[in-house]
Length: 217
Image 1 (spheres, one colour):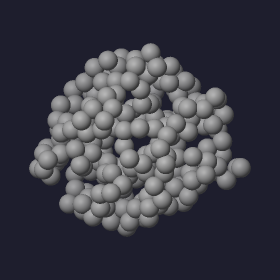
Image 2: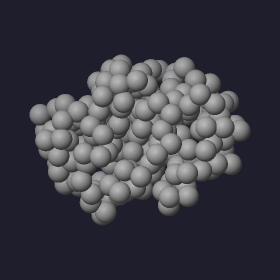
Image 3: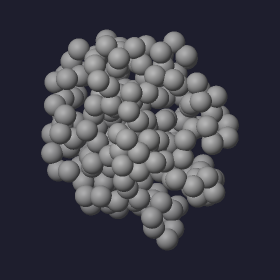
Image 4: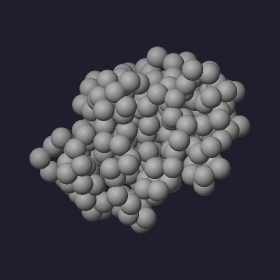
């Protein structure tokens, strides 16, 4: 069964804390993903890890780094992140990417690898010995609330065929209209951004999305 993962994408610390406290109170939530952006790999600058206080250890925290060539992960470790997800496209060479994935693992965190929608699934074949957690973007990364890209369903199935044991995460554009299909396609983890953060009642939206993938609507 797919697991829903709320996310936080904020440029302001007070707004970050508002979403943080509301998401940690959602019923049944186990994982939360925090987005980071440097204004280079993605056009917007998102609140850096150095400005985030230690995270509540009752949850599994994922850091999604939309950052060019990250190799220093100490701030994320200090915050208490359990998983660090970097982008394939953020590195100038596969060697630099492999070095980053190895560094994350050596620091006691789980490495994850994200690819943009236009990147071929086949590029992951040579990396599956280093990482087993993959994130597929369902939108152009860097902004919440943009349109879901329909080819994502097939990409989930293709990745499952390439790496049968992989943890597959889908991020971006999730709504009541498509969440069931994303789950059926084989996503283990489904990231929720604007579907719960840009609505009047976060808990109500969260419960409806959970009910949809559990067949209770």
